[in-house]
Image (cartoon, rainbow, N blue to C red; front, side, top):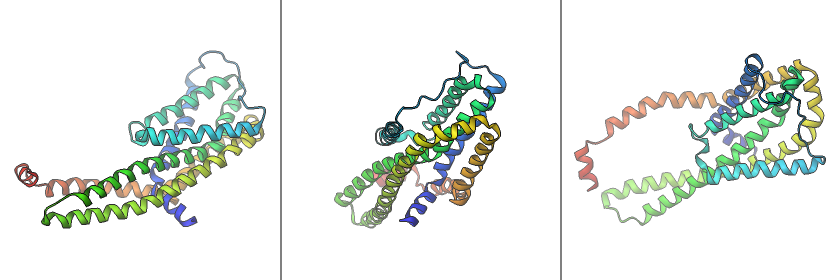
Length: 275
């Protein structure tokens, strides 16, 4: 099971690392920019984090909210991780940074950076779990589409010269389905596990133990945020191979485009082939 989790993390390390690192970068950069350039909008009062009186109920709330978000986005908005819709995730990061800045501006540098560092204690674990649940739900829809395609190829009455190609395609799809079912299983279970782990960290540790430390010691907050950025970049892009995946994909794009142009039959031939 350990090796299955590592293999799945390596396979999806590029997209997970890209979203996590970009979100963290945007929040750090926007917080610094707001402090240097702008003044907070609205009241300049310091608002304390709205925590539950009972940490257990707070943890249950975080669990329900994060799991519902991941499952809802994955099943009913599966396009959320495409390049253009994923901008919503990045803009949400900016909104959170701006809200944190406006709420804690009057408390000084320590207040603003302390709250940001506190959020980023459980945040990467929480967001990784949510993204894995979303990926599992998206993969579920691809599995449904692949199953329908295999059934359609099996029932289609094709010509004898086309049977070999159809069987070969169906065999490839079946192999992909088998691998993807394992990926879905790991993504869903490990994603839920990470969300469950992040809940008690946020409810019992982040706001009650580490928040006073981060807000009182600016240097600790800055050092932690810098360490976290380096660690996430190293983990997803170097250790798990995300950088290699992106580099390999970018190298193959020109070859794929050129091969399609060469192998594609003329328009007249395509009409005769499919008529």
